[in-house]
Image (tube, rainbow, N blue to C red; front, side):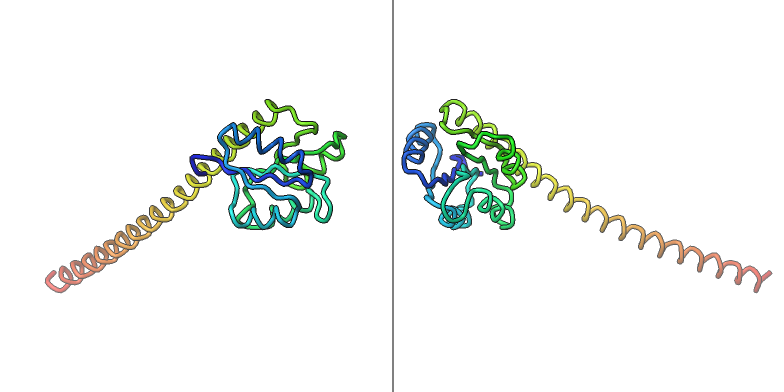
Length: 178
């Protein structure tokens, strides 16, 4: 994640976008804006944002479909998606989580809540990214250690064979002179 987090906003309502852009720009976030699901997917693939705020109800691709596609793209698989919707029923929220969202913000927006959720998920995302990196490093170190163990076992086996041959030769020598 860069020093300035990149947030992708996807909403078909200009008023919602204006409100979010004005507020989030004041908070020091870099923003990209899409007005529909297809454009959101294109921008997500191009910029790989640190977080995506995604409207649920949009013409064309709805938020659930967009989120599902984001989860199937290798570059955006790990981008946290927060759904934004006026749909406040439990089924809509659960459907959003099932599609891969990490959180749900109800419309109309409450500015402090939006920022708190964004900050929380940016922190979690950064920690997950650091954990994935550490895991990759551990896998690499484990492979290197396994290679060293294998080389040592080969040397020990060669030494054991040499020792056995020397013992056999010593016995033969002793029998010959003995």
